[in-house]
Length: 296
Image (cartoon, rainbow, N blue to C red; front, side, top):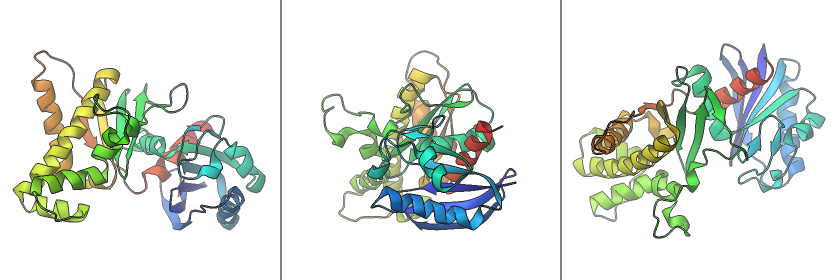
């Protein structure tokens, strides 16, 4: 049986037909409407119309703070017209079928819990290194949403106690993609601006200054993962985002995390750092997993 699965992002809505064996078909995308809720609903409706006779249900990965059981969005991220919306009920008026919605980072975690590199754990975390820091906590082999559905909003972690009131010292600023670019530029002592692709090309060719910049970035990431682990006692922490495909980055995060534990002076269980198995399709796969768990 096929399901229509959609990944609603800030610039595009990716969608595909996916069956229970994770076969992905008819994958495509359309621009995300940024103007009105009516435009958004009709865009989803037009996608639904193409496949309504082929699908059993519809699953959406969405930005924002979401109650997945109720199908309610407290916020919609950059899609402000979705704030405080009974999203599932509204969509079902246009698309009369079983519908589920889930936060995008939590969908990425569900993909790992259900089918990826976190299938064998009870407690852990997912850290998505992107424009900001997406995140999710996993408790008893399930996504932990928190009382207000915002557990794992790692972007907002403060990284400097002497300046806690500015965004300059939020984890997303320090260790999003822009933070990586800045750490490498600082290491190079130059005004040269490298792209993420260029950074890892140079690093994989042995450029020691670039590697030092990535290592400085990895040290900061490892420090915050350590803090998350001390609070939550993770078995594994999965790193997602495009740069998680770089083995060097995963190795450097693990090295720096081990170094922190080695200097504690006492033994404490330490988590294993793994890359997310699903990358560009993680939100789609995780939204489907959540849907199947909801209606099993």
